[in-house]
Amino acid sequence: MSSSRTARRERFPQLSRGLFAALCATICGLQNGLNSSTERFKSRWQTLALLALAELLGMSLWFSGSAVVSELTREWNLTGSTASWLTLSVQIGFVSGTLLSALLNLPDIISPRHLFTVTAIAAAIANCAFGWFAHDASAAIPLRFLTGMFLAGVYPPAMKILATWFGRGRGLALGTLIGALTLGKATPYLINGIGSTNWRYNVMFVSLLAVVGGLLVLIFVNDGPFALPAARFDWKQVGRVFHNRGVRLANLGYLGHMWELYAMWTWVPFMIRASLSARKSDPSLAEVGSFLVIGCGAIGCVVAGLVADRIGRTVVTSAAMAISGSCCLLIGFLFGANPVALLIVAAIWGASVVADSAQFSACVTELGDPQYLGTALTIQTSLGFLLTTISIELIPHVERIVGWRYAFAVLAPGPLFGVIAMLRLRMLPEAEKIAQGKK
Image 1 (cartoon, rainbow, N blue to C red):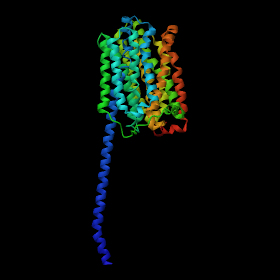
Image 2: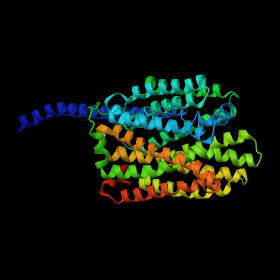
Image 3: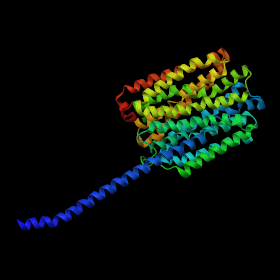
Image 4: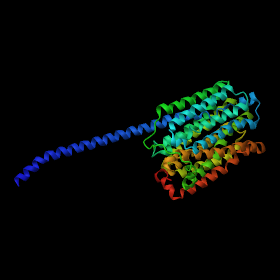
């Protein structure tokens, strides 16, 4: 008995030391894990900030031709139809680039960081050539087409990079990215309003911004902890996107949203210029006003992303499209009215018309095949931008017939269709995968 007791006494210090060592190791492990989580938390928000800035700078190329269209119309004697092609050519170029990228699975088989950098710089070169060498529409339109084609490598890859950093909070992250994109597309109007009186210098400056954006991603941005190995080329992935019922409905909602978005962004500055001109207001007010109206979308995207992660993506997208669709019907009645009233309603429209954009992409990342998210996102954007070429071209024809009072009403069916698609998605079992069940 005593020998057994003595043995236990001898083992007790060893056991105590072992337990103490195990406890210390556990505490150290927890501390290291906490430090690692903290570092990862910091890294993902730093990545979001850098990627958003790069997206803003890169996508500032988009409307660099539209922002100077008044000067080009005077200098090159452009017709209204030819002037609209300065924007349409970018849309068609972007569609061509996204189709090529999707068919080749480019965002999934090569580094999205490298794709972003190379295409941002290539788009900047094409835009710089437009600003430096173009002296008529026949030279400008092909160069704007190339700008749009290269920008296809800037937008979808950025969304994929963010998806590798954000498992939770993806709606806010993508909302911030699309908000930066929106602000970037508004930037040429601000530069044209407060910059040089020579439009060529303004276009060159925007091109420089895009180069900086590409280098930011190359030097400072890395793939996140949720990144998967590069996928193998599989052309069948394009078809599989359409067989996924949840992704299909998210894409249908996106199409309704896109029918309205780019036609609004393209033609609202024209409507504001015409309205303020009728009241003999300062022309620079129209440029700055256009920047603010489109730029309000940045706030809408961030707020919508924050709310969508908490109450559901289908709810937020439906509400945003209901508001923007109402603005389609209302805005025309303020043409020629008090500029303050016009700009307030236009700002509400600007905030709501793009607020839901990131949530359609977030749905695709949550419902689609993780290995081929880049391809799925590229297909979504390709189809959406293809549709925009119709609505952009439609608005000036309607305006010539019925005037600005009713021209934008033809956009209202788009958000209505989008609301129906997203409410249908909400009722599916697959919707439980959206935002950790907050569908």
